[in-house]
Image (tube, rainbow, N blue to C red; front, side, top):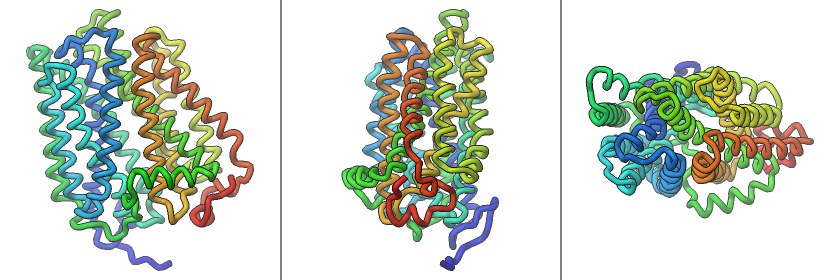
Length: 447
């Protein structure tokens, strides 16, 4: 098929009418989305203690419930913003999403009760849903099919940079402001205000930098309702490899939520309770440890992307699930999160987090039938959302009722269960071999 294409930027062949500026703006949005999305859950321990006075023994359940309801809102909002972005275009929906996120971030430290905090978190989540919905489809809008793997890999790198800037800069701001003489309240207000301003500026950049108009090459990801996506996704799950990818998405997104919420909470609470740090200092130290995990994720992203193209993709997923199970499970031996052993765990956790995301995504894109691609990928995303919901509720309970490593140990067991499942799939190696997309798109394979 001879498809007219545009220029090649950063090694990515663009669709017609897509400029280099459009592509660079897109990657800036990937960086900014993870930057701000990481900041909210990871800065939450500071807010819960210093602004709302919630005791540490309730932090796990409270954080889990906030994430749970935020994810419910995201699931509903995605079903709205998906079709809306098809009709109005990605640019206005993405720009509006960042502005709504900015409003939620600005209001966050002004919450006087937990209910107000939840309301502001839900407002923020609506904006995040708008942004992430568009980011998922902009890859298809901007890059031709043969360049989407490279485009997705670069997106993972930008996500990694965003996560690292969040932990090494944004989470350090309260301590920086306090060391300059600000009170705890002032440091918190200034931090959230600066992040809100940066988020709003990002939204304005989107209005000018992304491509105008609606997509001319949409794959129809948003043409189905949530119920249609569920039905079609379940039907396609008769293909064992697709069903496995759904399970892997559950693990991958749950892993991401566990790291984003409970890693910082664990280290911050230990620093204040056991080492006598103030909340801002402990948050800064927590950010450094989380930064190690995110740094390994950043370095591991291109490695696992290449691996998924070089070997059988089921094998690549098994490797990712094994790393995840070992990395998250090893935290059961950690009692002092400031110990050197925690660094080893952080390395494996970062690699497990990113490897599951990449390998599961590559597998589902290969196996999804062409006629149902939008619904299958939509259900794949929905499976990840369920993983986040389970991680939020069960993880929050285990964090408070058992031990801080409880959420990690729990998802280690889930990863091991999916790994066991994966070991019984793949007798027909061709269905999960790189370069077999043509057969996968025709009918569900009998992997």
